[in-house]
Amino acid sequence: MKTPHILIIRFSAIGDVAMAVPVVYSLATQYPHVRITVLSKGFARPFFEGLAPNVSFMEADIKNEYRGMKGLNTLFRRLKAKHFTAIADFHNVLRSDYLRLRFNMDRYHVAHINKHRKGKRKLTSIKRKKLVEQPTSFQNYADVLQKLGYPVQMHFHSLFPPEGGDLHLLPPSVGTKPPGTQWIGIAPFAAHEGKIYPTPLMQKVIEQIISQRPECRIFLFGGGEKEMNIIDQWCSQYDACTNASQKCGGLMQELILMSHLDVMVSMDSANMHLASLTATPVVSVWGATHPYAGFLGWNQSMDNVVQTSLDCRPCSIYGNKPCKRGNYPCLHNIAPEEIVEKVMKNLK
Image (cartoon, rainbow, N blue to C red; front, top):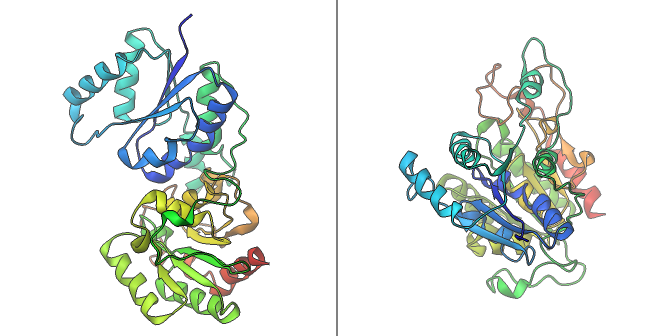
C-alpha cells in the first residue's frame, strides 16, 4: 500500500506561515504514518525542520527560480515527481491556485483554504459593520486537512522544550538568564502604519517598564534601516535595552531568545506569531485591525489584547488602508499605561 504523503502549500508573509506550525505539528503527531512536506519560502525552514520526524520542508523561490507561468510549470513537474497522495492549499492565491489546477487535472486529492472573505468584509465595513468573530487561521488550515480526510485536534505547545531553547547557541553578548531575572521583549513595528503604535508612546512604555522593573532586561525586535535606527537610539538611551535582532542575526536565534522571555509586547505582526510559537505570553497592540479577523497568536489570551473601542474599528484586515480620520486615533488613544499594566500582570 502506498504511504500517504501530503503536500502543504503556504507562501506569503512570515506570520501567516508561522500560524501553520501548530496545525502541521498536530497533523504529524496524530498521523505518524503520514509523510508531510511543507512547500514555502526559504525563511520558513526553521519552523518545520525538526518539527516532527515525518515532516520535511521544501523551499520554492516563486519570485525568481519559479517565476511566472513557465516557472510554476517547472515547479509542478518537480512536485509531481514526489508522488504526493493529497494536496493541501493553505494559501489560495493565484500561484497556489494554478498549482492546484494542475494537480486537479491529474486527479489528485486536493483541498484549499476558505478565507471567509465575506465575513471579513462585514467586519471592516464602514456603514454596515458586523463585529462578528471570524474563524481563526488555525481553524481554517485544519478545515483543509479535514476535507482531505485528516481531521486534527490541535495540541501544539512550543517549538522548544519547557526550559526553552539553548541559549548557548546565541552570541555571548546576549548572555545567560540568571534565576529570578525578568526578560521582556518588545517588537514595536509592523508592515503597515495602521498596526504600529506611535514611536513616542512606545518610548514611554519602555520608560515606565524600566521605572517599575529597573532590574529587567528589554530585548527589542525589528528589521529595516529606519526601524534599526530607532532601536539603536533607544538602546543607547536606556542601558536595559538590547537590540535583539542585531545580536541574534537570524530567525532561529530570535526564536530561542523569545522562548526565554517572560512576556513579549508586539503589534499585530509577525513577532506576535513568532513569540506564540515559543509559548511566550504576548501583550498585543491592535489599531486598524482586530483580533476578530482570526489572526490572534497561537494560544494567546484576549486578556492580553490592548485595543480601543471606536465605531470605525476595524477598518482593515491587514492594516494597509489609509485612516479615514487621518490620524489613527485607534492607536494614538491607547495610553502607555494600558500596555504597561498588562505587562506587569504577566510578570507577576
